[in-house]
Amino acid sequence: MPEIRDFSAERTAIDGLWLISMKEVTDERGTVREFYRESAFLDAGMPSLGPWLQINVTETKTGALRGLHAEDTDKLVAVVAGEAFGAYVDTRRDSPTYETVVTVRLTKGTQVLVPRGVGNAFQVVSPEPAQYVYCFDHEWVPGMAGTAVNPLDPALGIEWPLPIDLDDPSQISAKDKAQPLLAEAN
Image (cartoon, rainbow, N blue to C red; front, side, top):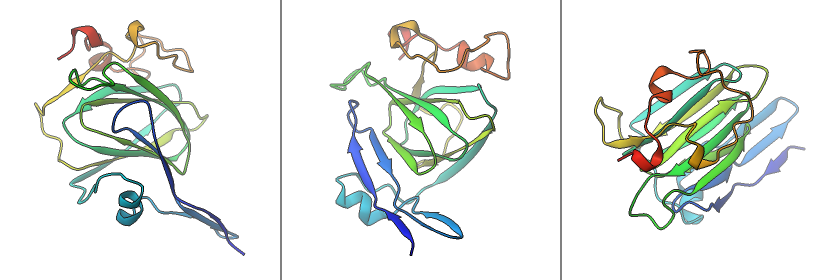
């Protein structure tokens, strides 16, 4: 008899940022997860997200940090292998939740709907590399509107679970560590 976990979605402290548990069916062969079902998202009060115009998968090593990027696109993100610590920051100056930070432990079956203008970052915490999937409602193009913020900005108060060596490019890119603090961004 298969085990079924129903889809659920909950709002977070950031306007438009949702934490989602995918519907999953597990039997002796393994698990099937519904990555996206339009009707479930609409029934939960979320916007229609399709069609996706770009989908990226990153494979990132343990301890590595990627982000904090807030492009002008809605994103649905999840890990499909490994585990990560996700951090999200509202960079929209006109938002009622501007500067709010939400952190989430990202495991298989957990997704985050990230609205345009909310920064997305993650650090891999599993012993093995993590595969992180990004679904975008617009294609990324060089010079795309958006904001990037230094993920180590002390004003954000993000407690990254693993130490980050700023001199090690396998842990943080030169581009990410050179981004401005949130107070200086935009």
